[in-house]
Image (tube, rainbow, N blue to C red; front, side, top):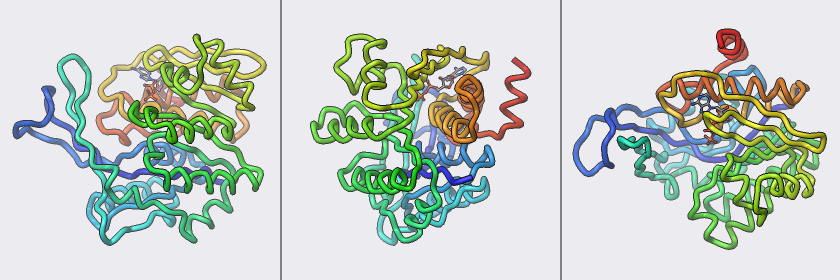
Length: 311
Ligand code: ADP
């Protein structure tokens, strides 16, 4: 089969051992863990045994090496990941508060992943690509938006399909040009993978049903709405499907949406019917929340089948 490719940030995540408020005193930390939404997504695709590649950039440092070695070991084509001599690999420090909210310290925008470019290796990867995935979180500069547009244009011209997870930070939507770029991604995508609140962000619709109708009207083939412990729903021109969340103990929600999306898209590309894609995707999201660390819950079909069978 032709590969699934995405473009965007590789970072490490370092998490506080104990809940509390932020990082204004010395505390115990755990990590570094391989991370970055596109990296988690593509690792999950590879775990399902589907050809997978990532276009990205890391620094010439251990945080970059940790990620590249992990992705390579899991079967991701890492040939289009640049190693930048001057910029360092990005990082995200995360600490839970007692109420379940999270405090972050990010070093991403000015890190190596901002230097992501489609190199000759990236071009070769896109030639073999049957599906391109766009993460809203990766579109944090106009240069990166341009790279993503170039990549998806090439894949579409080759007869491939495109998915889009808005995965967006609110600040980005406050910038009119940034908002326009994200709205434009909606026009290009075949599969749209928002969370419940994100479904309402990129249209003027007053309720979910209107938003779904409006987005399907743009030419999007399928909308899959991720609803956390509320499960997920699927919408296309023929109707709606819903899948409940699997009953698992949530330990760390980071990465659930990325694993869910990757599994949905991979199953769809392999020709499974929507209900089956949705069932595997929900299992993938559920498995992800049971593991500490953003990329530690990626899993193959055997593990997903076992989780489905046991619940
Ligand atoms: P995002 O990370 O994009 O906000 P969600 O948190 O909605 O995505 O998670 C994606 C999917 O993973 C959900 O639609 C659901 O199927 C599954 N999932 C998420 N949280 C849980 C949970 N606590 N228990 C079981 N499944 C979950």
